[in-house]
Image 1 (cartoon, rainbow, N blue to C red):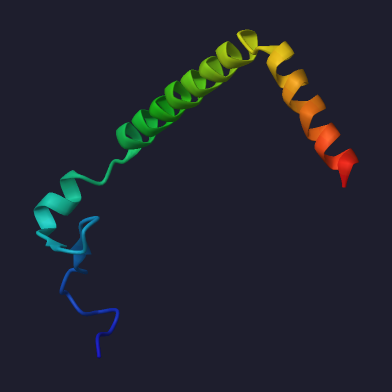
Image 2 (cartoon, rainbow, N blue to C red):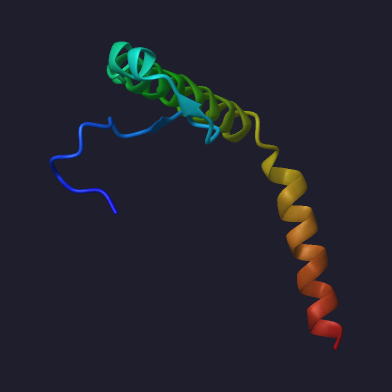
Length: 79
């Protein structure tokens, strides 16, 4: 059992669960670059998703949908 006065350094693990050397762990403590890149990537992804959705809404063919809806209404009324 380890005590607080134990001089052994704590083991650090990489994202895949492998132990990392102490020197490498001290150098790579900053995750701000990863966080910023993830936020930018998320913003680009959702921006493109909204752009595609807006384009699909813009070119939406309403007469076809109304024909399908009226056909479905007729089928339901026949029951």
